[in-house]
Amino acid sequence: MLANVRLMALRVGVQLHPQATSVADLRDAWKAADGMGADSIWVWDHFFPLYGDPDAEHFEAWTLMAAMATDTERARIGTLVTGNSYRNPELLADMARTVDHISGGRAYLAVGSGWFERDYTEYGYDFGTAIGRLRQLESDLPRMKERISRLNPPPMGDLPLMIGGSGEKVTLRLVAEHADAWNTFGPPENFAAKNAVLNKWCDDTGRNPAEIERTVAVNADDVDDVGRYVDAGADHVIVMIGPPFDLDPLASLIEQRPRFG
Image 1 (cartoon, one colour):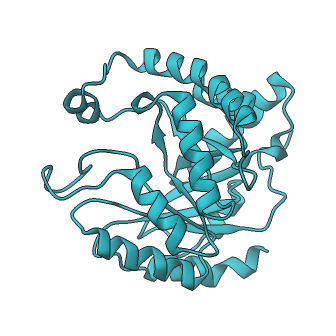
Image 2 (cartoon, rainbow, N blue to C red):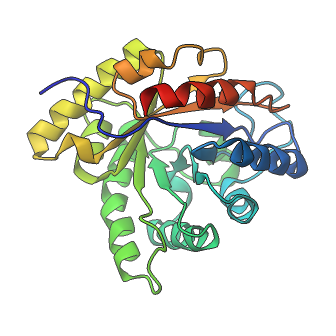
Image 3 (tube, one colour):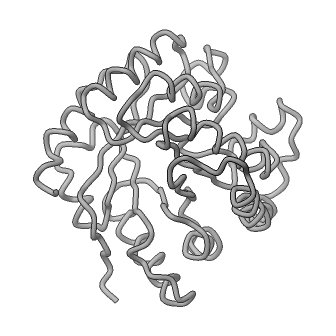
């Protein structure tokens, strides 16, 4: 199989970091991103800042998502990605379905196994071990899919199931078995290597690799030549931006997007 599987036009998006900021500034940023023509807008699912002042202002992801769903009109929305351990899988599926309706069918259900220990210890979750959290994700994914299939009304859109992560033995196998989309990080060499492993898992599990959207999260200083990521197999490039939410890197991605349509 070819290492790169890409059959769709390039999509571009932005992740807005919900730390050291206000809800008003976040809303201004995602409205601006939607107006610029971003294909997707994301927040992260943590309870504390990931860098800078550890006690800076911070906001919860899914309540922000509900506001984003009402404030935007075009872009798909999601968490990049939800910590699976933080919510019952049936509840998470119902939350995602509800946000999907609020947005008019534009939501992703994006999950990962979780990694930020402070989230767990301060909110009373069992941090456990990395393999234990992966095993929980493996058992919870079918539960999410089953609950979505039973919800009334069903999702308004296609509600793609995204899995975030890069573990070659378990995470990428779960992507091949369950996911509609996959996210990991740059640089291009890292993305290409992990993409090739995912394609191998698709071979091993009998999955058509073209069914899985390949997304990559990149730093704000790594957007000048998006073709490097397209060559590595990316369908969807998402720039990660913290406050004060300078959207120039997103504008650069949008300007480059027509070259890969």
